[in-house]
Image (cartoon, rainbow, N blue to C red; front, side, top):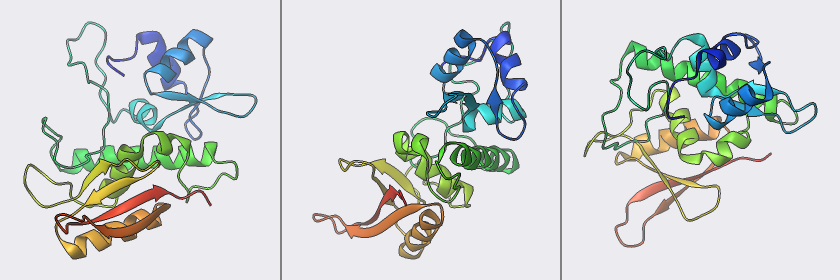
Length: 210
C-alpha cells in the first residue's frame, strides 16, 4: 500500500465484521483493498474477502490514516514488523508500538483461523509463506524480543536462497535459543546452524505445514 485508503474504501474497512474481518463492498473496492495489502480473497468458495493484519489495524484505529486532504508520507498507514538493523527511521519502542504489534499479531492469528483449512491458529497460513521475513519478525517482536538497531544486539531476520526459509541472527547465544523457542511456539520449524566462513550461529526457520 502506497497511500491511505479512499473514503469509500475506509467505509468498507470500518464496516468489516468485528470478529472475522469479513468485508462487503463492490468488486472494485475489494480488489483495490487486496492490491493495497489490506484485504485478501479467501481461496475457497464463496471466495469472500477478509481483512489482513494490516487491515485489522486500520479498522481498529491503531494506524492513524489521514484523510484525503492531509499531506502524509507515502508509507502512512502501513505496518511493518521490525526485521532488525533497519537503515531508515523505525518506530520507537514504547506503549504505542507495543499496541500496534499486539494488534497486528492478533490480526495474523485471525487470518490463520480464517484461511487454514482446519481453522488452526497454531500453524502459519498462506500469507505468512509469501511474507516470510515480515511474518517471522512479527512473531519475534510480538513475543517481546528486541530487534537489532544499527550495530546493536538484537535479532535480525533475513531472506535466504532456500525456499520458504528465513535466517534469524542474534549475537547473544542465549537470546538466539530463546528466539528459536518463540518461533517454534508460533508454528515454525527451527534449526540452528553456523556460517562456514565466520562461524556465526543463526537459526533457519520455515513455516510448519502440519
